[in-house]
Length: 172
Image (cartoon, rainbow, N blue to C red; front, top):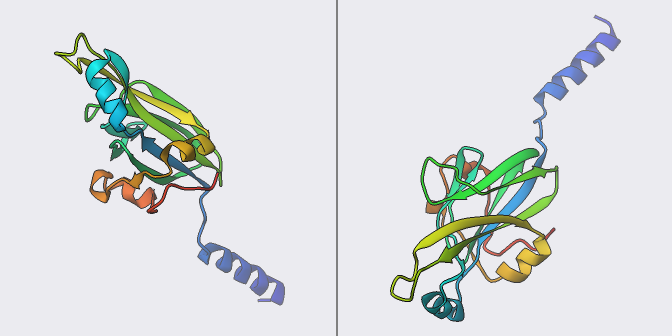
């Protein structure tokens, strides 16, 4: 075997031994929190916004059980994702937001709910989930004091994609 063959074989073996780094992006989801004024308004006003407390999906894959005033960040493969929020398990829900995430970028998605009620006696009659992409600057303004979602609320298979942080991400 000549030196050129040995060199090519060595390069090939090193290339196979090195880990293959997938292209990924981070996506932070947060559910709005109901402040005291909003809670009083919810009892008196027949329509408005409320925190989303339900299931978060990426396609048909459940990611987490969202809760008001909490956030969660995942490192996801680059490419197209369809995120949705639902109150029913095994039902990815509608509406959804479609994102084409690019390698190295950070995206932010707000979760909330719209409610409509008939009267003060029946304060919460109809609730619809709302999911929307927002700029990460806007998300930071709204959710900088939110706490991370409890680990038990994150689907066990989605935990491999979890980015653990005690504070809302500040990078864009």
